[in-house]
Amino acid sequence: MTAKELKLDYFQIYDVANRQATGNIFLQGQFDKQRLRMQLALLDFFANPVAKNAEPIYDKNAHLTWYRGGVQPPEPMRAVILENQFGKFEIRTGRGEGLLVPTQKKEPGSVFPTTLDHYKVYLVVDVGKVPDVTLKLRDQFGTSEARLGRPLFFSVPVRKRHETKEYPIQNERAHLLIFAITPRNLEKKVTLQNQFIPRGTSVAVVRSVMLAVPSIKNEWKQV
Image 1 (cartoon, one colour):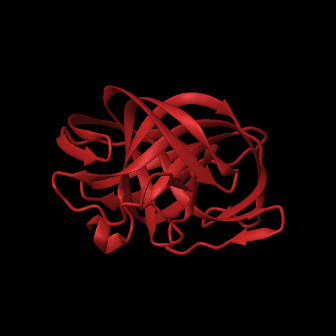
Image 2 (cartoon, rainbow, N blue to C red):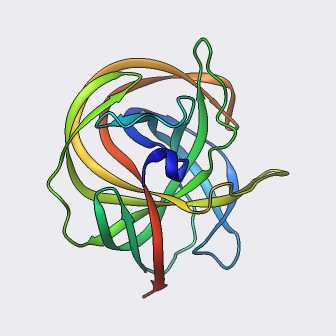
């Protein structure tokens, strides 16, 4: 169940100096019977594709920007059984926390990641046993070791409508289980571009805080 097999990278998620964001969007994923509205409020995190324990990166251009959601309707708790390279997990999801948006990190030779999905982020409110693992991570900001913590968030691919444009799901099989990791301080500035910042904007990267792991959702139910 490698990044290549699932056609989705591991992502090292970095805290950034927060920036206000605006966007009135409608999302629908495998949990939803209909489209649900989300109002973006804050650009909160940035994610690099990362090589875990020397496993190759699938798409070096695949980056994600994490936007916190403002106005969102309440949603029921879901029990989810999933698996990834670290094992099988039983989790329960809470409220929707925001949206992961495909993003181009502007630098020589980079292109926009057109095959990368949008992911709605849910808070994980309960989880079973978590393995005690230390990882070697390498991304475009450097190499580090990090200890895997507990899952904090779960992300599902979603269809998105923004203004008059539709963004379909392209890889419905692959999800992201997002773990806490040992933080690493970093001082970088990157220029990001996506549909909410079409002319690009400079963002200050502060520290690595989480690891998003490609995962398969085997079953789920509302509880």
